[in-house]
Length: 145
Image 1 (cartoon, rainbow, N blue to C red):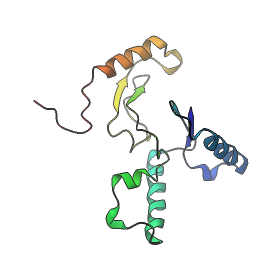
Image 2: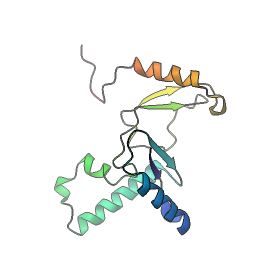
Image 3: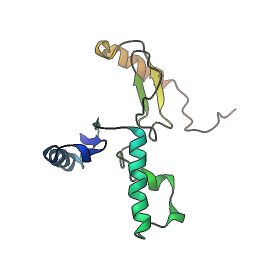
């Protein structure tokens, strides 16, 4: 399992930042599951931090602004190198994304359930995955007739 901690880590204690860095380094080449932990995370903040990092590269001459694409910006997000989620499950019938993974959820399928998180069971997960499997994913494209 590859572990990644998302969020603004600069406000965390130095010893915690060190442990996070060690954990991410130790698991970075593991494939299969991607386990992401959000600490001090906000989607808008993530995008702002990514733009600031990219802007610094432009100012230093390392990046040509004419060549900036969506993929370029993605490389500066907390989730760089991690696939975007295919499915987001919201419990308690919450029908909002709550400032979470704003960039990455662009083409994610959403599943809403009235079941509260503490009561979310394997059976409910199976329902969500089955519903997802019946979706016609178009990734922003139009439905072909």
